[in-house]
Image (tube, rainbow, N blue to C red):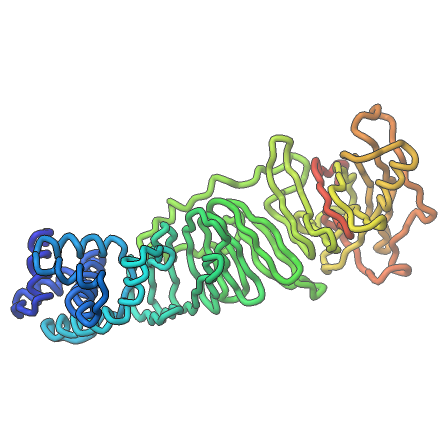
Amino acid sequence: MDRKKYEYLTEMFLEGTITENDARKLLKAIEQSAELEETLYRDAVMDAVLTKSLNSRKDRTCTRVMASLRDSEEKKLLRNNIMRDLPDKRVFPAQEDTSTVLHLKWLKIAALFAGAAFLIIFSFSFINNQDIRDTRTRIVKRIGDVNISKDSINTGKDSFYRTAHEDGTQLLVNADTELSMSIDEKTGAKQIDLKKGGIFLDVTKQKHPLTVRLGNAQVEVLGTRLMADNSDTPSVSVFKGKVRFSESDTACHLYGGQYASLMTNKAGKEIIRVQRLVSGNKNLSWLSRLDINEKDLECKEYIKDSKSNVDYNDYSVFGGEWDVHNTPDGMIVKQNDIEAQAAIVFGTPRWKKAKVMCTIRAVKAASEKFNTGFRLLYPNGLADECGHENVFKRMRERHSYKDGWIEIFSIFKIGKNNNLKLIKTGARLPHWDKDQCMFFKYKDEDPHTPETSSIKTRECFATGFYTDNCVMEFKDLRLEETE
Protein backbone atom coordinates (compact mmCIF):
# COMPACT_ATOMS: atom_id res chain seq x y z
CA MET A 1 0.00 0.00 0.00
CA ASP A 2 1.38 3.40 -0.95
CA ARG A 3 1.77 6.16 1.63
CA LYS A 4 -1.06 8.39 0.37
CA LYS A 5 -3.57 5.51 0.44
CA TYR A 6 -2.44 4.57 3.97
CA GLU A 7 -2.77 8.16 5.22
CA TYR A 8 -6.26 8.43 3.68
CA LEU A 9 -7.42 5.21 5.38
CA THR A 10 -5.84 6.30 8.66
CA GLU A 11 -7.73 9.61 8.63
CA MET A 12 -11.04 7.78 8.02
CA PHE A 13 -10.22 5.36 10.82
CA LEU A 14 -9.42 8.16 13.27
CA GLU A 15 -12.60 10.04 12.28
CA GLY A 16 -14.69 6.85 12.72
CA THR A 17 -15.98 6.86 9.12
CA ILE A 18 -13.99 3.89 7.74
CA THR A 19 -15.95 1.22 5.87
CA GLU A 20 -15.55 -2.51 6.50
CA ASN A 21 -13.87 -2.99 3.11
CA ASP A 22 -11.37 -0.18 3.76
CA ALA A 23 -10.85 -1.51 7.30
CA ARG A 24 -9.77 -4.86 5.86
CA LYS A 25 -7.25 -3.09 3.64
CA LEU A 26 -5.86 -1.07 6.53
CA LEU A 27 -5.66 -4.13 8.78
CA LYS A 28 -3.87 -6.11 6.08
CA ALA A 29 -1.39 -3.27 5.61
CA ILE A 30 -0.46 -3.03 9.29
CA GLU A 31 -0.18 -6.82 9.58
CA GLN A 32 2.36 -6.83 6.77
CA SER A 33 4.36 -3.85 8.01
CA ALA A 34 5.54 -3.36 11.59
CA GLU A 35 6.38 0.25 10.72
CA LEU A 36 2.83 1.06 9.57
CA GLU A 37 1.42 -0.75 12.58
CA GLU A 38 3.49 1.36 14.97
CA THR A 39 2.59 4.55 13.08
CA LEU A 40 -1.11 3.79 13.37
CA TYR A 41 -0.78 3.16 17.11
CA ARG A 42 0.97 6.50 17.57
CA ASP A 43 -1.53 8.38 15.40
CA ALA A 44 -4.39 6.88 17.40
CA VAL A 45 -2.79 7.90 20.67
CA MET A 46 -2.12 11.43 19.41
CA ASP A 47 -5.67 11.78 18.17
CA ALA A 48 -6.88 10.81 21.64
CA VAL A 49 -4.52 13.28 23.31
CA LEU A 50 -5.28 16.22 21.01
CA THR A 51 -9.04 15.84 20.75
CA LYS A 52 -9.97 14.37 24.13
CA SER A 53 -7.44 14.76 26.92
CA LEU A 54 -6.65 18.46 26.42
CA ASN A 55 -10.34 19.41 26.50
CA SER A 56 -10.45 18.99 30.26
CA ARG A 57 -7.53 21.36 30.89
CA LYS A 58 -7.93 25.12 31.31
CA ASP A 59 -4.34 26.35 31.47
CA ARG A 60 -2.94 28.88 28.97
CA THR A 61 -0.91 26.31 27.03
CA CYS A 62 -3.88 24.05 26.41
CA THR A 63 -6.03 27.02 25.38
CA ARG A 64 -3.50 27.83 22.65
CA VAL A 65 -3.37 24.19 21.60
CA MET A 66 -7.14 23.88 21.34
CA ALA A 67 -7.33 27.15 19.39
CA SER A 68 -4.85 25.82 16.87
CA LEU A 69 -6.99 22.71 16.36
CA ARG A 70 -9.69 24.79 14.71
CA ASP A 71 -7.39 25.09 11.70
CA SER A 72 -6.73 21.75 9.94
CA GLU A 73 -3.25 22.81 8.81
CA GLU A 74 -2.37 24.02 12.32
CA LYS A 75 -3.68 20.74 13.73
CA LYS A 76 -1.53 18.72 11.32
CA LEU A 77 1.56 20.79 12.14
CA LEU A 78 0.95 20.51 15.87
CA ARG A 79 0.43 16.76 15.64
CA ASN A 80 3.65 16.32 13.68
CA ASN A 81 5.61 18.39 16.20
CA ILE A 82 4.35 16.34 19.12
CA MET A 83 4.73 13.05 17.24
CA ARG A 84 8.40 13.87 16.74
CA ASP A 85 8.88 13.71 20.52
CA LEU A 86 6.52 10.78 21.12
CA PRO A 87 8.16 7.60 22.52
CA ASP A 88 8.16 4.73 20.03
CA LYS A 89 6.56 2.39 22.51
CA ARG A 90 3.68 -0.06 22.02
CA VAL A 91 0.84 1.07 24.28
CA PHE A 92 -1.16 -2.14 24.18
CA PRO A 93 -0.80 -5.64 22.62
CA ALA A 94 -2.15 -6.50 19.19
CA GLN A 95 -5.80 -7.64 19.18
CA GLU A 96 -6.78 -11.19 18.28
CA ASP A 97 -10.35 -10.31 17.14
CA THR A 98 -11.25 -11.84 13.79
CA SER A 99 -13.56 -8.96 12.85
CA THR A 100 -11.55 -6.27 11.07
CA VAL A 101 -13.86 -3.38 11.94
CA LEU A 102 -14.15 -4.54 15.53
CA HIS A 103 -10.35 -4.95 15.64
CA LEU A 104 -9.82 -1.36 14.56
CA LYS A 105 -12.64 -0.13 16.77
CA TRP A 106 -11.01 -1.63 19.84
CA LEU A 107 -7.66 -0.29 18.65
CA LYS A 108 -9.07 3.24 18.75
CA ILE A 109 -10.85 2.71 22.08
CA ALA A 110 -7.65 1.37 23.61
CA ALA A 111 -5.79 4.34 22.15
CA LEU A 112 -8.21 6.73 23.87
CA PHE A 113 -7.43 5.17 27.23
CA ALA A 114 -3.74 5.06 26.37
CA GLY A 115 -3.88 8.72 25.44
CA ALA A 116 -5.07 9.62 28.90
CA ALA A 117 -2.29 7.53 30.43
CA PHE A 118 0.33 9.12 28.19
CA LEU A 119 -0.88 12.67 28.85
CA ILE A 120 1.34 13.03 31.90
CA ILE A 121 4.38 12.02 29.85
CA PHE A 122 3.46 14.39 27.03
CA SER A 123 2.90 17.20 29.53
CA PHE A 124 6.47 16.89 30.73
CA SER A 125 8.04 16.33 27.31
CA PHE A 126 6.00 18.69 25.14
CA ILE A 127 4.78 21.45 27.45
CA ASN A 128 7.72 21.45 29.89
CA ASN A 129 10.31 20.44 27.24
CA GLN A 130 11.78 17.57 29.31
CA ASP A 131 13.69 14.77 27.56
CA ILE A 132 12.05 11.33 27.68
CA ARG A 133 14.07 9.76 24.84
CA ASP A 134 15.84 7.36 27.20
CA THR A 135 12.59 5.36 27.48
CA ARG A 136 11.81 5.11 23.77
CA THR A 137 11.58 1.68 22.20
CA ARG A 138 10.21 0.42 18.92
CA ILE A 139 9.06 -3.09 18.10
CA VAL A 140 10.88 -4.41 15.04
CA LYS A 141 9.54 -7.96 14.88
CA ARG A 142 7.36 -10.24 16.96
CA ILE A 143 6.84 -13.96 16.33
CA GLY A 144 4.61 -16.37 18.23
CA ASP A 145 3.64 -16.24 21.89
CA VAL A 146 5.32 -13.12 23.31
CA ASN A 147 4.00 -11.71 26.58
CA ILE A 148 5.03 -8.09 27.22
CA SER A 149 4.24 -6.22 30.41
CA LYS A 150 5.42 -2.87 31.73
CA ASP A 151 8.94 -4.06 32.53
CA SER A 152 9.23 -7.69 31.41
CA ILE A 153 9.28 -9.88 28.31
CA ASN A 154 8.43 -13.59 28.23
CA THR A 155 8.65 -15.69 25.07
CA GLY A 156 7.11 -19.12 24.62
CA LYS A 157 8.29 -22.08 22.59
CA ASP A 158 9.30 -21.12 19.04
CA SER A 159 8.55 -17.47 19.84
CA PHE A 160 10.92 -14.55 19.27
CA TYR A 161 10.98 -10.81 19.81
CA ARG A 162 13.09 -7.90 18.53
CA THR A 163 12.97 -4.30 19.71
CA ALA A 164 15.04 -1.16 19.06
CA HIS A 165 15.80 1.60 21.56
CA GLU A 166 15.79 5.23 20.46
CA ASP A 167 19.58 5.44 21.00
CA GLY A 168 20.12 2.66 18.44
CA THR A 169 20.54 -0.23 20.89
CA GLN A 170 18.76 -3.40 19.74
CA LEU A 171 17.50 -6.30 21.86
CA LEU A 172 16.67 -9.69 20.35
CA VAL A 173 14.99 -12.29 22.57
CA ASN A 174 15.26 -16.05 21.99
CA ALA A 175 12.49 -18.57 22.54
CA ASP A 176 11.72 -19.80 26.10
CA THR A 177 13.21 -16.66 27.61
CA GLU A 178 12.15 -14.65 30.63
CA LEU A 179 13.62 -11.23 31.43
CA SER A 180 12.83 -7.94 33.10
CA MET A 181 14.18 -4.47 32.31
CA SER A 182 14.67 -1.28 34.27
CA ILE A 183 16.41 2.10 34.08
CA ASP A 184 18.24 3.64 37.02
CA GLU A 185 16.42 6.86 37.89
CA LYS A 186 19.58 8.68 38.96
CA THR A 187 22.06 7.68 36.24
CA GLY A 188 19.83 6.52 33.39
CA ALA A 189 21.79 3.24 33.19
CA LYS A 190 19.86 0.38 31.61
CA GLN A 191 19.54 -2.97 33.41
CA ILE A 192 18.35 -6.35 32.16
CA ASP A 193 17.69 -9.30 34.45
CA LEU A 194 17.87 -12.43 32.28
CA LYS A 195 16.14 -15.03 34.45
CA LYS A 196 16.28 -17.77 31.83
CA GLY A 197 16.89 -18.20 28.11
CA GLY A 198 19.03 -16.07 25.81
CA ILE A 199 19.27 -12.61 24.30
CA PHE A 200 21.34 -10.84 21.65
CA LEU A 201 22.33 -7.21 22.19
CA ASP A 202 23.74 -4.66 19.77
CA VAL A 203 24.55 -1.83 22.16
CA THR A 204 25.47 1.67 21.03
CA LYS A 205 27.92 3.70 23.11
CA GLN A 206 26.49 4.26 26.58
CA LYS A 207 27.24 6.99 29.11
CA HIS A 208 26.77 4.45 31.90
CA PRO A 209 27.28 0.67 31.55
CA LEU A 210 24.30 -1.42 30.50
CA THR A 211 24.13 -4.34 32.93
CA VAL A 212 22.83 -7.84 32.16
CA ARG A 213 22.29 -10.06 35.19
CA LEU A 214 22.61 -13.84 34.68
CA GLY A 215 21.73 -15.30 38.07
CA ASN A 216 24.84 -14.80 40.22
CA ALA A 217 26.85 -13.53 37.25
CA GLN A 218 26.56 -10.27 35.36
CA VAL A 219 27.80 -8.57 32.20
CA GLU A 220 28.61 -4.85 31.99
CA VAL A 221 28.54 -3.20 28.57
CA LEU A 222 29.47 0.28 27.36
CA GLY A 223 29.01 -0.38 23.65
CA THR A 224 29.38 -3.68 21.88
CA ARG A 225 27.65 -6.62 20.21
CA LEU A 226 27.12 -9.72 22.33
CA MET A 227 24.90 -12.66 23.18
CA ALA A 228 24.09 -13.56 26.80
CA ASP A 229 22.63 -16.88 27.88
CA ASN A 230 21.27 -18.18 31.18
CA SER A 231 19.88 -21.55 30.11
CA ASP A 232 22.24 -24.17 31.51
CA THR A 233 25.05 -22.01 32.85
CA PRO A 234 25.62 -18.22 32.67
CA SER A 235 27.63 -17.39 29.55
CA VAL A 236 28.41 -14.51 27.20
CA SER A 237 29.63 -14.40 23.59
CA VAL A 238 31.29 -11.17 22.42
CA PHE A 239 31.18 -10.38 18.71
CA LYS A 240 32.51 -6.85 18.86
CA GLY A 241 33.92 -4.46 21.44
CA LYS A 242 34.59 -5.23 25.11
CA VAL A 243 32.55 -6.34 28.14
CA ARG A 244 33.19 -7.12 31.80
CA PHE A 245 31.95 -10.54 32.94
CA SER A 246 31.86 -11.19 36.69
CA GLU A 247 30.60 -13.51 39.41
CA SER A 248 31.08 -12.88 43.13
CA ASP A 249 34.76 -11.91 43.60
CA THR A 250 35.94 -13.04 40.14
CA ALA A 251 35.84 -10.89 36.99
CA CYS A 252 37.46 -10.74 33.56
CA HIS A 253 37.35 -8.45 30.53
CA LEU A 254 36.28 -10.02 27.23
CA TYR A 255 36.96 -8.84 23.70
CA GLY A 256 35.46 -9.50 20.28
CA GLY A 257 35.81 -13.16 19.33
CA GLN A 258 35.71 -14.52 22.88
CA TYR A 259 33.22 -16.68 24.77
CA ALA A 260 33.08 -17.03 28.57
CA SER A 261 31.06 -19.21 30.89
CA LEU A 262 30.74 -19.74 34.62
CA MET A 263 31.94 -23.21 35.59
CA THR A 264 32.74 -25.38 38.62
CA ASN A 265 36.07 -27.18 38.22
CA LYS A 266 36.88 -30.69 39.46
CA ALA A 267 38.06 -29.26 42.76
CA GLY A 268 34.62 -27.70 43.33
CA LYS A 269 35.74 -24.09 42.78
CA GLU A 270 33.72 -21.56 40.78
CA ILE A 271 35.81 -20.27 37.87
CA ILE A 272 35.27 -18.24 34.71
CA ARG A 273 36.44 -20.10 31.60
CA VAL A 274 37.33 -18.01 28.54
CA GLN A 275 37.65 -19.53 25.05
CA ARG A 276 37.59 -18.58 21.40
CA LEU A 277 34.05 -17.88 20.34
CA VAL A 278 34.27 -20.57 17.65
CA SER A 279 35.11 -23.08 20.40
CA GLY A 280 32.21 -22.02 22.60
CA ASN A 281 28.48 -22.52 22.20
CA LYS A 282 27.43 -19.81 19.78
CA ASN A 283 23.95 -21.20 18.95
CA LEU A 284 23.19 -18.39 16.51
CA SER A 285 20.63 -20.10 14.29
CA TRP A 286 17.66 -18.50 16.07
CA LEU A 287 18.83 -15.01 15.09
CA SER A 288 17.82 -15.63 11.47
CA ARG A 289 14.19 -15.67 12.62
CA LEU A 290 14.69 -12.02 13.58
CA ASP A 291 16.44 -11.05 10.33
CA ILE A 292 20.05 -11.22 11.60
CA ASN A 293 22.49 -12.90 9.22
CA GLU A 294 24.92 -15.16 11.06
CA LYS A 295 27.65 -14.29 8.55
CA ASP A 296 27.45 -10.65 9.62
CA LEU A 297 28.56 -11.73 13.10
CA GLU A 298 31.85 -13.29 12.05
CA CYS A 299 34.54 -12.01 14.39
CA LYS A 300 37.83 -10.62 13.19
CA GLU A 301 39.05 -9.40 16.57
CA TYR A 302 40.58 -12.57 17.97
CA ILE A 303 43.54 -11.99 20.25
CA LYS A 304 46.54 -13.25 18.36
CA ASP A 305 48.09 -16.48 19.56
CA SER A 306 51.56 -16.39 21.02
CA LYS A 307 54.24 -18.46 19.34
CA SER A 308 55.38 -19.71 22.72
CA ASN A 309 52.94 -22.53 23.62
CA VAL A 310 50.45 -20.09 25.21
CA ASP A 311 46.94 -19.52 23.84
CA TYR A 312 45.64 -16.20 25.14
CA ASN A 313 42.13 -17.11 23.96
CA ASP A 314 41.95 -20.09 26.32
CA TYR A 315 42.24 -19.45 30.05
CA SER A 316 40.49 -19.80 33.41
CA VAL A 317 40.39 -17.23 36.20
CA PHE A 318 39.68 -17.57 39.91
CA GLY A 319 39.41 -14.47 42.09
CA GLY A 320 40.48 -10.94 41.19
CA GLU A 321 39.77 -8.91 38.06
CA TRP A 322 41.73 -10.03 35.01
CA ASP A 323 42.32 -8.27 31.71
CA VAL A 324 44.18 -10.10 28.93
CA HIS A 325 44.65 -7.72 26.02
CA ASN A 326 46.89 -6.90 23.08
CA THR A 327 49.09 -3.78 23.14
CA PRO A 328 51.83 -2.36 20.87
CA ASP A 329 54.29 -3.99 23.29
CA GLY A 330 52.62 -7.39 23.00
CA MET A 331 50.15 -9.29 25.16
CA ILE A 332 49.60 -7.86 28.65
CA VAL A 333 47.94 -9.85 31.43
CA LYS A 334 46.79 -7.59 34.28
CA GLN A 335 45.16 -8.35 37.64
CA ASN A 336 43.42 -5.17 38.89
CA ASP A 337 42.04 -6.09 42.33
CA ILE A 338 44.60 -5.00 44.92
CA GLU A 339 43.05 -6.99 47.78
CA ALA A 340 42.39 -10.24 45.95
CA GLN A 341 44.03 -13.62 46.09
CA ALA A 342 43.69 -14.37 42.42
CA ALA A 343 44.92 -16.78 39.76
CA ILE A 344 44.87 -17.26 36.00
CA VAL A 345 45.87 -20.42 34.09
CA PHE A 346 46.22 -20.75 30.31
CA GLY A 347 45.00 -23.81 28.45
CA THR A 348 44.47 -27.26 29.96
CA PRO A 349 47.03 -29.51 31.69
CA ARG A 350 49.36 -31.08 29.12
CA TRP A 351 53.00 -30.58 30.19
CA LYS A 352 55.23 -32.87 32.22
CA LYS A 353 58.20 -30.52 31.99
CA ALA A 354 58.63 -26.89 30.93
CA LYS A 355 60.79 -23.83 31.40
CA VAL A 356 58.28 -21.09 32.19
CA MET A 357 59.34 -17.48 31.62
CA CYS A 358 57.68 -14.08 31.78
CA THR A 359 58.20 -10.44 32.71
CA ILE A 360 56.31 -8.98 35.68
CA ARG A 361 55.66 -5.58 37.23
CA ALA A 362 54.02 -4.62 40.53
CA VAL A 363 51.68 -1.69 39.81
CA LYS A 364 50.38 -1.29 43.36
CA ALA A 365 50.55 -3.29 46.58
CA ALA A 366 48.20 -3.45 49.57
CA SER A 367 51.05 -4.21 51.99
CA GLU A 368 54.71 -5.21 52.17
CA LYS A 369 53.64 -8.85 52.23
CA PHE A 370 52.24 -8.90 48.70
CA ASN A 371 53.33 -11.81 46.53
CA THR A 372 53.18 -13.27 43.04
CA GLY A 373 54.56 -16.17 41.03
CA PHE A 374 53.71 -19.07 38.75
CA ARG A 375 50.65 -21.26 39.24
CA LEU A 376 50.55 -24.88 38.05
CA LEU A 377 47.13 -26.47 37.49
CA TYR A 378 46.63 -30.24 37.41
CA PRO A 379 43.85 -32.35 35.80
CA ASN A 380 42.11 -32.85 39.16
CA GLY A 381 41.53 -29.09 39.46
CA LEU A 382 44.09 -28.62 42.23
CA ALA A 383 47.08 -26.30 41.85
CA ASP A 384 50.53 -25.43 43.20
CA GLU A 385 51.87 -21.90 43.52
CA CYS A 386 55.61 -21.90 43.10
CA GLY A 387 58.71 -19.74 43.29
CA HIS A 388 59.64 -16.05 43.30
CA GLU A 389 58.47 -15.28 46.81
CA ASN A 390 59.44 -11.72 47.75
CA VAL A 391 61.22 -11.25 44.40
CA PHE A 392 60.63 -7.48 44.46
CA LYS A 393 61.94 -7.17 48.02
CA ARG A 394 65.05 -9.19 47.16
CA MET A 395 65.73 -7.06 44.09
CA ARG A 396 65.46 -3.88 46.15
CA GLU A 397 67.75 -5.18 48.89
CA ARG A 398 70.42 -6.68 46.63
CA HIS A 399 70.32 -4.71 43.39
CA SER A 400 68.97 -1.22 44.20
CA TYR A 401 65.76 -1.99 42.31
CA LYS A 402 63.03 0.68 42.64
CA ASP A 403 60.26 -0.22 40.23
CA GLY A 404 59.65 -1.44 36.68
CA TRP A 405 59.75 -4.82 34.97
CA ILE A 406 61.51 -7.95 36.28
CA GLU A 407 62.11 -11.09 34.21
CA ILE A 408 61.47 -14.35 36.06
CA PHE A 409 61.72 -18.03 35.13
CA SER A 410 61.32 -21.50 36.63
CA ILE A 411 61.95 -25.01 35.33
CA PHE A 412 59.32 -27.51 36.50
CA LYS A 413 59.15 -31.26 36.04
CA ILE A 414 56.68 -33.90 37.17
CA GLY A 415 58.90 -36.63 38.59
CA LYS A 416 58.30 -40.16 39.77
CA ASN A 417 55.64 -40.75 42.42
CA ASN A 418 53.92 -37.48 41.39
CA ASN A 419 56.66 -35.27 42.78
CA LEU A 420 56.91 -31.73 41.41
CA LYS A 421 60.56 -30.94 40.94
CA LEU A 422 61.53 -27.29 40.90
CA ILE A 423 64.80 -27.72 39.03
CA LYS A 424 65.82 -24.06 38.84
CA THR A 425 64.24 -20.67 39.40
CA GLY A 426 65.56 -17.13 39.09
CA ALA A 427 65.03 -13.48 38.21
CA ARG A 428 66.86 -10.74 36.37
CA LEU A 429 66.45 -7.11 35.36
CA PRO A 430 65.96 -6.36 31.65
CA HIS A 431 69.19 -4.29 31.40
CA TRP A 432 71.39 -7.03 32.85
CA ASP A 433 73.79 -9.03 30.74
CA LYS A 434 72.40 -12.23 29.30
CA ASP A 435 74.27 -14.46 31.75
CA GLN A 436 73.51 -12.34 34.83
CA CYS A 437 70.75 -13.73 37.06
CA MET A 438 69.61 -13.83 40.69
CA PHE A 439 68.83 -17.46 41.53
CA PHE A 440 66.49 -18.67 44.24
CA LYS A 441 67.69 -21.55 46.37
CA TYR A 442 65.46 -24.11 48.06
CA LYS A 443 66.50 -26.57 50.74
CA ASP A 444 64.45 -29.35 49.22
CA GLU A 445 64.91 -30.30 45.58
CA ASP A 446 61.38 -31.72 45.60
CA PRO A 447 59.36 -29.11 47.55
CA HIS A 448 55.99 -30.56 46.46
CA THR A 449 55.50 -34.27 47.12
CA PRO A 450 52.46 -36.41 47.93
CA GLU A 451 53.85 -36.75 51.45
CA THR A 452 54.19 -32.99 52.08
CA SER A 453 51.18 -31.77 50.09
CA SER A 454 47.44 -32.36 49.90
CA ILE A 455 47.86 -32.97 46.17
CA LYS A 456 48.42 -36.69 45.65
CA THR A 457 48.24 -36.79 41.84
CA ARG A 458 50.24 -34.64 39.44
CA GLU A 459 50.06 -36.25 36.02
CA CYS A 460 50.74 -33.07 34.00
CA PHE A 461 50.22 -29.33 34.35
CA ALA A 462 49.07 -26.09 32.75
CA THR A 463 50.66 -22.84 33.83
CA GLY A 464 49.71 -19.27 34.67
CA PHE A 465 50.10 -16.72 37.47
CA TYR A 466 48.86 -15.97 40.95
CA THR A 467 48.71 -12.66 42.83
CA ASP A 468 48.21 -11.89 46.52
CA ASN A 469 47.33 -8.38 47.73
CA CYS A 470 48.66 -6.51 44.69
CA VAL A 471 47.86 -5.15 41.25
CA MET A 472 50.19 -6.96 38.84
CA GLU A 473 51.05 -6.90 35.14
CA PHE A 474 52.57 -9.82 33.25
CA LYS A 475 53.92 -9.99 29.71
CA ASP A 476 56.05 -12.18 27.44
CA LEU A 477 54.80 -15.44 28.94
CA ARG A 478 56.40 -18.35 27.11
CA LEU A 479 57.12 -22.04 27.62
CA GLU A 480 60.33 -23.63 26.38
CA GLU A 481 62.04 -27.01 26.77
CA THR A 482 58.60 -28.58 27.03
CA GLU A 483 57.86 -32.29 27.31
